[in-house]
Structure formats: C-alpha cells, structure tokens
Length: 420
Length: 81
Image 1 (cartoon, rainbow over the protein chains, first blue to last red):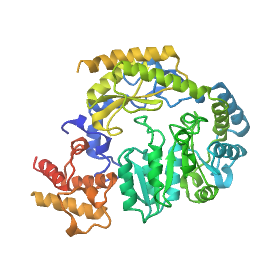
Image 2 (cartoon, rainbow over the protein chains, first blue to last red):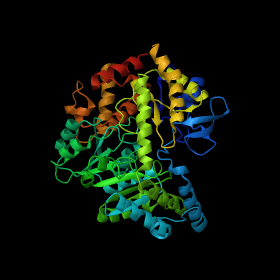
Image 3 (cartoon, chains in turn blue, orange):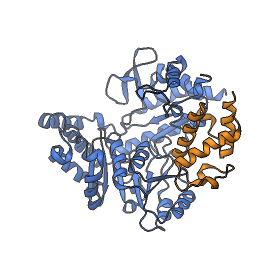
C-alpha cells in the first residue's frame, strides 16, 4: 500500500473479503504498518486512577506509568469523583447491588430510577423523562423511536454519530445542513416541507466547542408548522444557563425545544443518557425505543450516584461558576500564545494545528512525556485540514494546573507552530 | 477501461442508492447532492464504485471533488495506474 498515512478509518468501511469474519485485506496491511501503529498508540491508553484533574496513565508510547494533568476526560464538573456522589453510589450499591438485572419494562425499573427520571424532567421543565443505560443508546434510540420510513431527519452536519445512527435505524431520510448555516437549513425545510420533519442540533458541538445558533434556528423553524426540534445537550447540561439547564436555557428558548437529550457520562460524571419531552411521546418511546425497552436498565448503584450529582450541581452555581472561571483563564492563556482555538464558546477548547498529521502525533507524544494528557484528534473525526488537540476544561483544575498546562502547550505546540 | 465505463459504474451505483432518480436524468457535470444525496449516500456510492473498479483512493484525496465527472476522472487515474 502506497502512502499509508493518507489512509484513515474512513477508507475501510466497506469490506471486500470473502469471509465476513475477515477484515479487508488492505486494512490488515494498513494497521500493521509501524507508522500507523504509532498513531494508534495514543488511543485506548489505560488510566490507572480516577479521571481527576491530575491522574496517572499507563503510556502506550513507552509502557511507563506517568502522572499527568488531565485535559481529556469529560469530568467537566468533577462530579464523577465528588465525595458526596461517591458516598451516594456506595450506599446505592450496598442496597441494590451492582446491576439492574432486567429491562425496564419487566424488572429493571427501581424506585431510584423513577425518582431520578422525575427529577430530570422537573429540572428540564418538561413533562416526562426516559432514562437510558447509555448516552449513545439514548440519542440513537430516541431518534429511531420517533422517526419512520418516509420521514425526514434534517440535522447539522456536525451532529454526533449517535444521531446519525438513529436516523439510519429509523429508515428516515437524512439531510445535513452546513454547520450552523441557517439559509441552508431553510432551503432543506422548504424542499421537504410536505414531509414529517425532525431537526436535530447540538447545544455545544463536541469537536469545536461552539454553540448552535439557536435563536436563528428557532426563527426559521417557526415558519414551518409541525417541524420539531431535537436538541442534544450532551456537552452543555448542568453547565449552560442560569440554572444549568443547558444552551436552550442560555438562549431563553427551552419552550421551543420539542425534545431534549442529555448524557449522564459527562458533566454528571456517571454513565447513561436521557430524553425529556411531553408525557405522551415519552410513553410512546417506552414502547418503540429499542435501547430503552430491549436493554438492561441503568444500574441502580449508578443512578444513586447520579441523583446526588444532580443535587450537588443544582443546589448552587459554584461548580459551573468555577468551570467558566477556569475556561476563561485557559482561553486567555491560549490566545496569548497566539494559538488557533476556533470559534469555541464553551469548556471544549480545540487547539487547531492544521493538516500535518505527523506533526500532530509528534506533538502528542511530547505533550505526554512532559506530563499532559491531551489527546490528538485526527481525520476523519475532524476535517483533514484542521487536525487538533481538544481540551476539556474541568472545575477540578487549579490555577497552578492550568499554568503548568499552558507552559507545556507553549513549549510543545506554540513554539513549534511559530517556526512553520 | 474508458472513462465512459467508469461513469457507467458510478451511475449504476447512484441509481442503486438514491431514490427518485431516473437513469436518463443524470448529468455528470452535476454533484450527487443535486440528486438529493447526503454525505452518507455519497460515501456509499463512492465506496461501492471503488470496490467494483478494484481501486482504493484515500478519502482525503476525494474531499475536493464536487461533480460526478471529476470523480470519474479521479477513478480513471487509479484504474490506469
């Protein structure tokens, strides 16, 4: 295979081997190339401690244990390691055991999950909520449960794979509008206005950290009766808005969101997903959303911790206030280094380095050996011309942690980019 | 293999993958998007066509191609390698 480094996961989706249990022959050849293996060595590195702001990893680069400042975990509010959350989860574990031991419809519904779903619905100011044991399953399952063949799912081109997979499973036609391009969205709505349409967007886009242009999107959609909005607030719930309800609250447009999704694995610090909407459609989804009714229910031990996480995050604004303080301080430091952080408006901050994949991985290795856990994001996850590092800011970072991280970023990224 | 042969493979895969498109209406100077294809449909057409033509082109080299005609040119380049 010529030019192995030009290839990516985007190129081996179709398998031409005679036996379906054999991957494509050229995929094997590609994966075995030492240069490709080096790139993959950055992924699936083992964390040896909790995903706090400072943690320890077993480096795939050299097999060594390494203490690192953690800029990669989604533990935005530090709730996965909050003492009260851990204590609540331990109590839940003691009382209910490890898992749910059943699907929700038969034996997997616990008093804790009913309580938590009600808390989430109240928090999001919707009538009802459906809990999923996986965030991806929640997004995929809600879309798959809502749409049918002949319907249209119109979504921002930067929407998460779980929404796309939900669309594929549903049999609906999918159309993607250019990222936050209101005119393009309007063209698609006009073209398919005679169909049943769901428009899917995200509150915070996960690779760029920018927000949906919600006021403009709502203004356009309001011109079309019966077009519903699905907002994925995976990276914004508990963080945006006066009460932490998300980007829709931030813009004062919660009442316009037909259905709102959140994950329980990011700011909540646990695992799972949820959707909130009117009680009739939630009741319908209970029957038709496969990752809900054909999956084991969320583990009650985790739900016990999540109830406490929601209480801690909403009893005052201290956690999100600290997150925004950290975010602003970090952003200012990166801009002072003249780094390209795109259009971020959130705690997700990209450092865009350009098209040079070799340089991306060389920098990644150096960052790690200097004590920073900051993962590279390569094509096809992001466009080939804007490969990047992606910082997840956490409440748990101290000013000293951020200063140290900025020093390392300056040494490894900023100084090298200046020489190009 | 001629360019017409390559175009025929692409057109066949467009017809297989896109609804509401008739054979005679495909203008190769246009993009598949003009026939209602989304990015997933385009990947499907490109990948199945490459498999049939027994070629492999990195996706990064296809990013700027915006018409069926220029896709056929790129494919032909690899078919004749």
